[in-house]
View 1 (cartoon, rainbow, N blue to C red):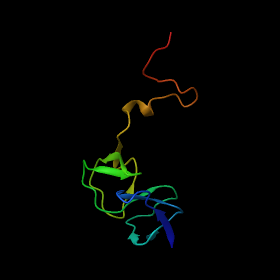
View 2: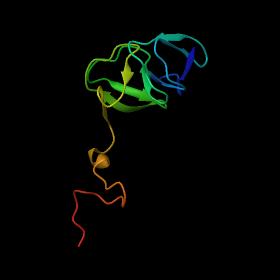
View 3: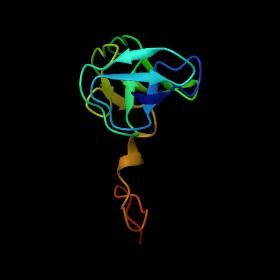
Length: 104
C-alpha cells in the first residue's frame, strides 16, 4: 500500500510518497480511502474541507478550498486557490521578471 505523509498534526492534507489508486497509509498510522487516483507528490484530503475553508500543510494555511473537498479527494489547483500573492504566477519562467511591470 502506498504511503502518504502528514507534515504537521494540524494539517488537513497529506502528500503521497508514490502513485496511488485506492488507499494510502499515513506515516504514523491510519489509512485514507482515495476517491480517485492521486500521483506521487500530490495531496490528499484527510477530512472534508468546506468551500472557503483553509487547506493546511506544514501547520499553516497554504490555500483556500475553492469548492467543497471530500476526505480522500485529490487537492490541487482544480479545487484549491493559493493564499500566496496572486502575482506569483505572473513571472517570466526564464528571467523571473514580473510580467505586469514594465522595466525601462
